[in-house]
Image 1 (spheres, rainbow, N blue to C red):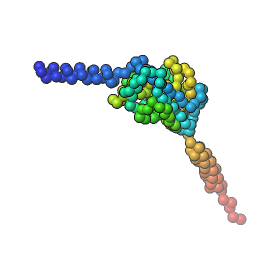
Image 2 (image 1 turned 90 degrees about the vertical axis):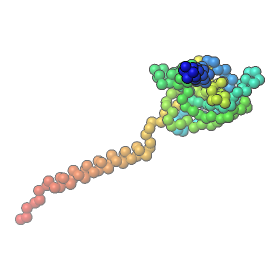
Image 3 (image 1 turned 90 degrees about the horizontal axis):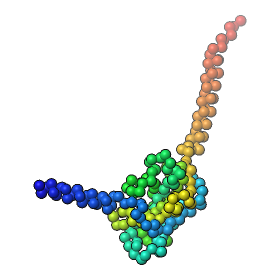
Image 4 (image 1 turned 30 degrees about the vertical axis):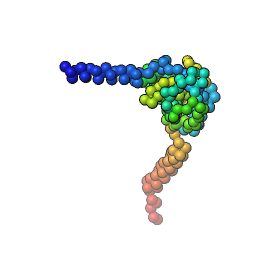
Length: 205
């Protein structure tokens, strides 16, 4: 009986811990960080080539001590609603443990209320889509306790796009052309050789 009670208590504590740390709702977070990014609205960046400079700082309009639990800032590249349509793997969910809006990490740095910035190369594996940048403030347990983003509440302003790489490389194209030319030359040579073999030799007088 005692063992059953102990097990039950452990389960209750585990559930409480998950409720506290595993089910943070985005709607419960205050927008305490001011975040900006270098791309202009509508600008198209090339994956693997272009860079983004992200800047963030604490919004001092909040009461002093609001950021007392902030330990780390995680900056992420996030899908805009227009690039989430009919894509369940990018779906926005209020429960951050299940949210798939921000899948591309930019940087994680120790928290400071002062102005911070980071230059990030758009990675080659970033899909072609429309994006914005969001920063989460985390506490000592790694739980989201605040945020900021480069767009408005509805995620429709100050958006930019990323053009994915084609997957082809110039050297591959050159090699392909060379191989095709070699194949043609080889085929012509083989044809001429066969033609010579088939031609009857003239008889001597």
